[in-house]
Image (tube, rainbow, N blue to C red):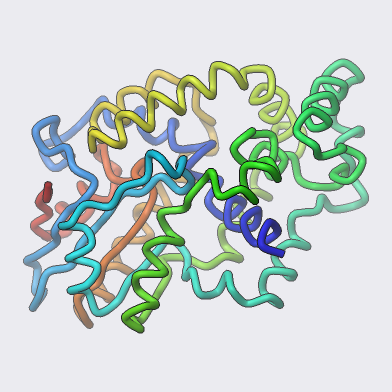
Length: 307
């Protein structure tokens, strides 16, 4: 059950591992409201625009090796000061077993479609061989939507790495700190919404992305290692530049990233007016002219980095 929960957690945050690079391309056209190279930080304080007290914004990597995980003293202090802790989705929803099982059912393709229907023999063998190597026979996963299989294709998401505790989740660690102090928790969007977004991408396009992700697995591991190093340096500009060099998801970018960032701003505004709130979202959402920092500034908030 713990592994099932972890897989569901990864599914709901797939936007930030598969799609983040597309949004980062817009960072190259930074405006004066987008974070500059001198403002590199994972932690930001939000004030002004009618707020009676500050709130905070923190950029995460949703899954990271336990040896690379860190939370600064400032971050812990602001979590402590906040009255509410808010994630992309309400993390407490993910502990509800009935909700988990209901959402897991949405991971299956409609109309009896299987992966075999979407791939030629050569590509199917590539996928099948890869999943056999990581201990997940493909016959058990034939009807799972290919985008979800892209998550499972990562070695970091294999049963061994997940059950051994080699990978940690920033959201889970921050949630535990919030629960310890019995803080209110919230979400900027729902689990149902995040799961439903996958349906906007045709199955054949998802299958193509799956094959490409497996074929480039070694290069992807190297890229992720570089990304983690930039993350540890809190270099969000470097992360944006690095992601901007990679091929994104083109026509799905606005729906999967830009529109979501814009949708979050009024939700954040309402929460911040009510009480000091600590927001934890994927670091890929912070930078660039359509990132959360710039969008908050456009609404009249003062958003400053904290190191």
